[in-house]
Image (cartoon, rainbow, N blue to C red; front, side):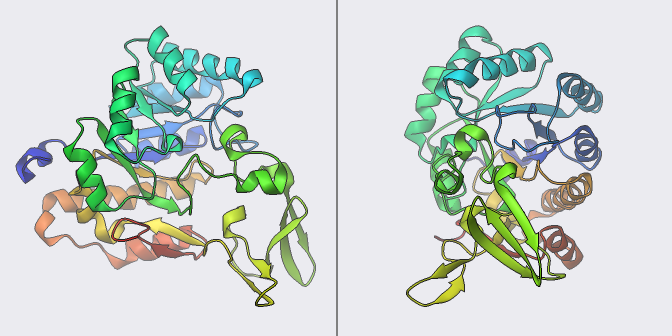
Length: 341
């Protein structure tokens, strides 16, 4: 992993999300080193109506970022079925022509296409590939000449250190965003409730299946399944099957049967995360607002800079933490698996 002085020469890259052009500009202006985005449609896993980019917006975003020496990564990380494969190939073609700095991919057919057709295109393997051991990393390196892997949120810092000791491929991890009980790319909960899979459609709760009804309470359904209800005035987050509240026939009580609604936030343990040997720190949230992107990027930029100024006496301001909590609808923060499983 190298000495502290070695690692100080190459600081951890801060990678921020953008679901539209204003968010992209906010991320760049707030201190992101790189911004990741996707085209509108099912080629990426944030496939929501009114979200993501059309061709000319990506072109403008790339020009804006490059003028400020920042990078743009294009996400093409769904698992396309036969009828969608051509569209994903076209997204890769467009990304190359627009000179994105890297392509984030999970499907083997898309990786093969990109590598064969564009030998100079930098490839990152998406978190959706669920890579969690160095043998898998080396497989992707050997067959597709990848440069980076985005790790799933199931690893401890000690396991990340072991990966880094056994590969020279860059490692990227999530620092902020909703937690998931699954290894990414392995979830089929939405398939049971809606018949649409997140891995192909691009959203774990396809919007046209989500229904809100309001009487004495706000009730939320995915398809025909009631997954939550809220008292009036209570903050709510976008519904996902894993964080729903369900009736337990054994206890005859409502509860978060699958997973408590928590959000990942490593702000207070940033030294441990950086010193595990990572190369990039990722913020989740392409589906969120420009204000969110601006706020979270700003605080994570400040925290990273503070670490590199004085790694032995790292402290954050409590107000950063408070402001981030507000951005996540009041959800409790957790460290995920980073410190222990």
